[in-house]
Amino acid sequence: MSKNKGSAYGQAASDTDFRKTYDLDEYAAKAKEREAAEKEERKARWEAKMAGKKYYKPLDGSETLTTARNATQDFSRMVGTSTLVPAGAGVGKRGRGAGFYCEACDLTFKDNLQWIEHTNSMQHQRSIGQTGEVRKATVAEVHARIVTLWERKQEREREQVVSLKERLEVRAEEEEKERDEKRKKRKEAEERRRLEKEAALKIKTEYGEDVRVEGEHDEDDMMAAMGFTGFGTTIKK
Image (cartoon, rainbow, N blue to C red; front, top):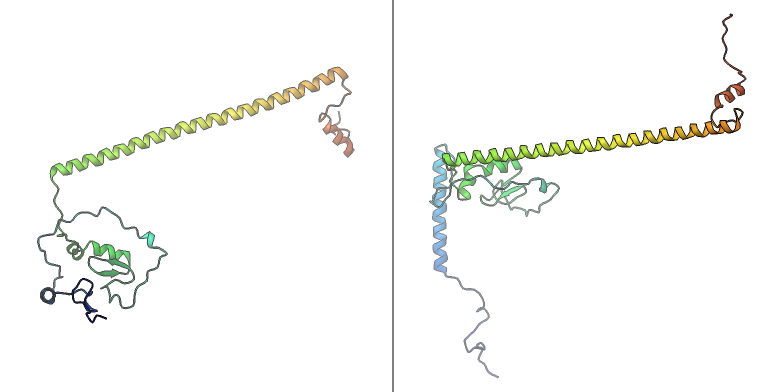
């Protein structure tokens, strides 16, 4: 049995050769740079505090002008939901905790109003790479914007007029149908009464006045059952 413990490719191997190796000098230089940046930031924060000012991340020249948000935050979708937060994940506002989390600033806010105020703050603008300054629009851009808004308003008014006209037409048609239906029912009732009268008149003509037509003598029958022969007057002539 061979005592050579080399690999199958003829190279020496050990049980830790699969592990990734790191350049210690490179990572030591990165750590030194990070510590220097943190030291400089602490110094800048202290100087701003002593001057009674608020510290903002310094500009490095890669920032862009601040623009309006093109999307809205739907807070209603979070109603009735729950979030699992590991213990010790956040200290105060720093870190991801229970609430509204800002990834750019690594801060958590307990309500949506605080979150909105933070997104409009200079701290957040600097963190997302914006200067906090808004570009001034030119006269041509302002004129084009006014024209666009005016055309949009006119289009809404035209749509409203068209829709109102259509609703009035539909309502007029419905009222006309209701009137036709009432006229039809009234004519049917009149025709039914006319046929009943003609039938009663025909019976009387054929069989004389002694024939009782259904419903014709109901009042007389009721008076006879109650013992009344008629309603006369008490005035003496």
